[in-house]
Length: 617
Image 1 (tube, one colour):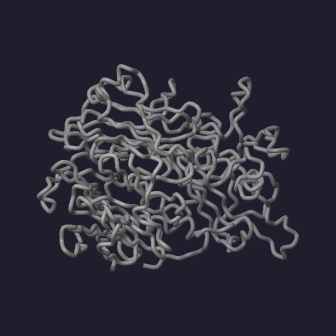
Image 2: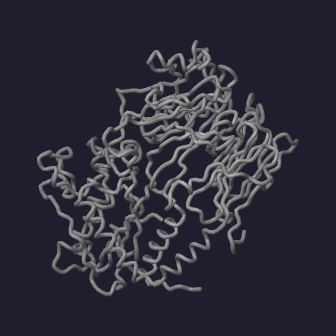
Image 3: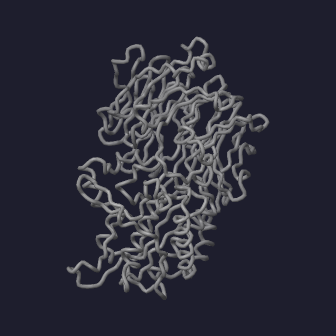
């Protein structure tokens, strides 16, 4: 495999200019980076593939897209795959409903709609006719405006919803009056990696954002600058964003991110702070009822909220489960890698007690307070989810909530609710939403909705080391430059996963497996008896991916084409090396249904062509 003559004639790869003088010194090791932007202002016109807005990058992308299109036109199964995938996607999809006030809300896609639609139903008619509350498909002609996040106020009077454009992580929050679906004038911009947390008086909400970058196009999504200074704000309904309260900032730690939540009794706002993607966080709280003039009175002070530091170290994760006034129940992995439940009284913060010990083998994934004084616990047990019902006050076991082997995707309920909705899926079940009445003597899982797919009855590899073993490689939005990923957008948060080249020991790990820095000509290996080459390769990225920015794939694509093909007068590399670069799309979230189908048809028809697979009806 990996050397099929799938393409009739050699490809003419676009040439990207290389600056061989661009060299970085990593702890005494000199590393070339020829497709790097030049930071010298005098030489700014010579920007290379790291600048998404440079004409050079745009020209390179355009030529790569034309090359890829020419290859895909030779893939005979492409249209059959597209038709088949369209039929497979065309079935109703539901999220589990959640309750606010006297209403239920849920997301639903009838089948091939570009984006999921938010529906509303009154409490006593969940099996009745729903009503569309917000249809993001009406916000753009091409379906690239997505509903990224949303939150309903306590009495279900207002909906705050965040929309994103072209798959970007940037979010703009708008507000709708639910009764008549009037969209208010409120506009909150430059929001990213944020929750929306309403105060119980319905006067506003907490959210997280980055500072306004100034002159750049609003919520562009194509920029690569590093995201710094994530801050917590409070927005008052009916006011301009410039009047929002800056609730918390930490200029000494610009890479930290933060989120907030309001406790179910409405008394406290909790602040979670993260230093990276590791399972650790700080947790602070602010007693909203202790503020003499409330948040509105505090706004005039122009001071940060008086948060109290409950946990001020990054030694474990802490997540709110429930509280009875000052007594908080939290889920934590402190001295418990499989997680446990603990309890602390805010009046005596130095004394913590265990409510539920760490299990001997199962991992506690989540804990939800329900039905007054009960807990639904979600455990990962032998690679499947299992649910338990326990007593919130004592931790005592009450019931198992029986499930087939599979994955729990959602648990929707509140402490005041006696009914819990559970989303479930598996290799045999495309999606079921169960309802469970916890007031019953023995709670039963009943099917509330089931996704029905027509005709359906109930790999990681190292191609660089042994490219001859693989017929085709598909790489999706990959982190390819492991020496510099932390310098772009939110990449600095991933150093807990990969390591960081700024640290000498970790640099020596990274240089050994960074894809960009390990492109070698396999035929140069004299120990091999047969001529080998890289498998047919498609790198996939998108122009608005501001999570893993496109430069990762573009630089690797240019490097592979140069090292394996264009730098040689005659190259043994006949398998194609191409890139699929989606327009008006991001890292994957919010991608319209048709774009998902088109991408899948392209990549699988390419793979079928390269491995000489045939279509069977």
